[in-house]
Structures are given as C-alpha cells and as structure tokens.
Picture 1: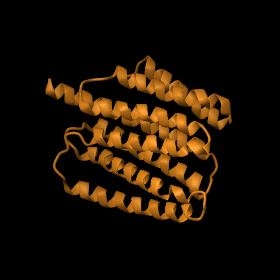
Picture 2: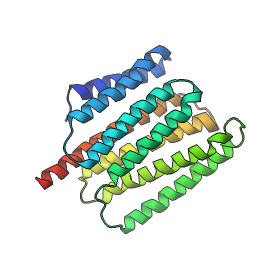
Picture 3: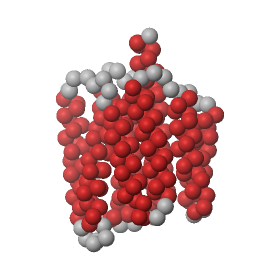
Picture 4: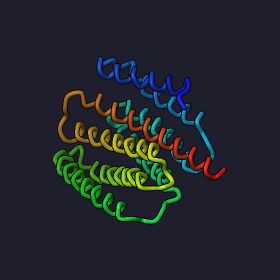
Length: 229
C-alpha cells in the first residue's frame, strides 16, 4: 500500500508540523495544501471500484479546499467550516454504504456520542453567546458539531460490522476520533480559551485522522472487492 505518493504526503505533513512548531508562517502556505494534495494522489493510486471509495476521495478533495480557506484570515473561517461540513457529510455517506441491521452496540454508541454532542453544544453556545462577534456562529457551529458527531458514530460502528475487517475498521474509527478531536481542539482554542501549541495539536490530530480514515477506506474497499470477485 505505501508508495511514492504516500511518502511525499508524509514528508509534507511532517514539514507542516515543523512549520507550525517553528512559526514559519510563509512555509505553511505551501506545506498544508501539498500534504493533502499528495494524500489525495496516493488515495487515487490505491483506487478500487466501489461507491465508498468515491465518497472518501471526494471528502479528501473537500478537505483540501477547506484547508486553503483556513489558511487565510478569520473572515474566511465560515467558508472553511462549510467545506469541512461537506467533508463530514460525504465521509458519512461512505461509511454508511451497505449498512447491516441495527444492533445493541449501535444504540450504545448513539447514546455515548449523544452525551458528548450535548456537552460540546452546551460549552460552545455558552462561550459563543458571550461575544457579540461570535454569536452569529452559534447555528453554524451547532450544525457542524452535529455532522461530525454523526460521522464519528458511523465510523465507530464499523468496529461491529462484518463487512469491515478489524484492521480497516480500527483505522477508520481511530481516524474519525482524531478528526473529531482536532475539530474540538480548534473550537476550544478559538472560541473558549486559547491553550499552548493549540495549532500544532490541531494539525497533528487532523493529519493523523485523515491518514487513518483514508487507509481504512482503502483496506475495506479492497476486501469488499476481493469478496465480490
């Protein structure tokens, strides 16, 4: 599965982390989009037939666009948020293809994530409404939190699905958790209280999440393709 494109993606991911750590502001304008670009190329090079692969590939493309928006000033934040909302929606479609019957594990996960979702909404609404400049973000942030929570639910549910091999579902679930953590850290730093090295931790969890989700999707699609051949 590793090839030149994956190594290039890993190189620019590491370079992007270094740019944030060292405050090389100009460098990150190249490293951040290039990291996702080469991850997309790697994903396409691994392509096998299957609707889920199409959705995950589309999600990576949306992520690249969202990354570019977030590189610019705060006034582009809402555009980046919108594009990443689309990212989670298409990942959700990819994760929910060929769903099995609902089981006890699903309801358990639903209850746990619902509690997390409510907690995030309470904290975010409380802090967003404190600032007149941020009040208009209450609804968009609420919609976004809902989308990523549902995406996380379906990613974790792959752990209990027979059509997903354990290593693929493990990657997808851990990737979704990391992506979720990245967004929560970003929201806390931006709207609640800034914390040390926030951008670095946001970027590390984001990149690792994208890598794990992509690898899990590739492995699952390969297994499905083999079983159908």
